[in-house]
Length: 380
Image: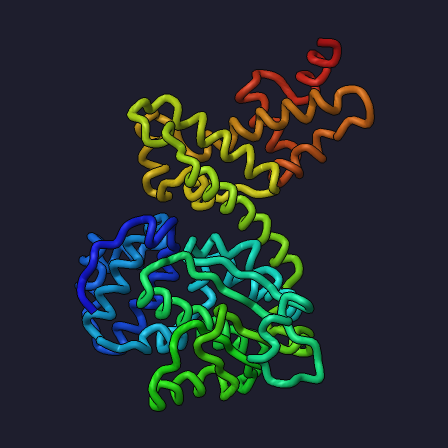
């Protein structure tokens, strides 16, 4: 494989650093020069390790993978990298899957949250009639089947093959770990890549079993629906709900970033505090405020967020307090006539440990108590 210029059209969007790190961990175990691979993308290895550093671009990931392939000459690099999957490899999605009750619950959460891992591809579930065109490639089954198709967004053929191998090997390994089922095998694995030589086929069979179909129309793992009821090792419904709220906030931030938040990059500093407070207000509506998630929503690192606020003479805690008081005023005004929320209820909703904490903060900002403010605005 020769070095080629890669464009954002060939490798679109963003990639989480943990997703890139999985490839580098595999490469390091193979004795490859991971620092060189990162340098090919104008990155230091420590930058990929830095979880607070935001996301990489698709082009950066493609350049890293291209260099690793050049170094190794190994067409099975993607397949081998699946053995290095960890919950954190999928960012927040990995921990969401860990908290699910069953394998089926986990499978159905891949597509809604996979953008947190990056824009490398999209997952599509195939059932019933959607599987009919593939029937001639599937082994006979007495139970209904579910197809989990992955459509790679990258257009460089050798990178597509590597990434599909990585995604399917990682899914399979992670599902086995989640379900405490080391021998769990898919019903079939369909790959669009041409059939490799006999030695490479054996390596695929070690991961996926013998029901492999090369030269298929789509890249798809097919599983038995009876396996979807398998219980997972660490179910936690309360944690799952919390993680999903955070994931929704992160997704909202990624959408904002993809649309372009030019105000964030503007040299005009005085608007940044307002942007932070607006992001905090969104987080309050979802039930929690986390500085790292706020930074992600704004498309900066946590350290950059702190630096930008400091340059304006502000602190994150000050922004949280002002955003809380603004929301408290809205709730006090909204509920000033019919079935008003008590101050204690408003305090709990805004994350205060006790009502008197809201009283003190409200007095600092507004110069009066919440009750007095409600009464003053009752007839306005």
